[in-house]
Length: 142
Image (cartoon, rainbow, N blue to C red):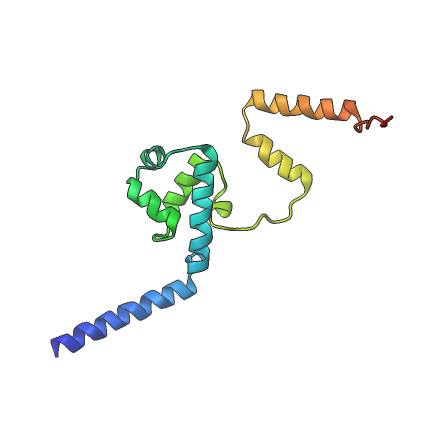
């Protein structure tokens, strides 16, 4: 009898967990976990960060970073926020999302807002250089 009650309770917990996952739009399915893990690895490697450095910065064990990057474990919301800051990538990108179409000026404004004042001036200077330079001239071959 006690065994049946335990199985019944576990079954209810499993069903409740499954319902919560189905009803939770933020729950990560296997496909999303795969996309997230590959993006996490890509972002860390792009910055040239060793696993040990990323783990220390994220307050995680190295094995946890490897588990996240291999898809053996899904990241928590708090971990995604910390990884977003460390890897300088938006959470939507880390989780395998697609960029939504946005007007050019809005995209440019979003990117400029994340730069230092000195970097913003460098971008403006480069844009002015490009505008003043006009279209490239292609030398005619002899």
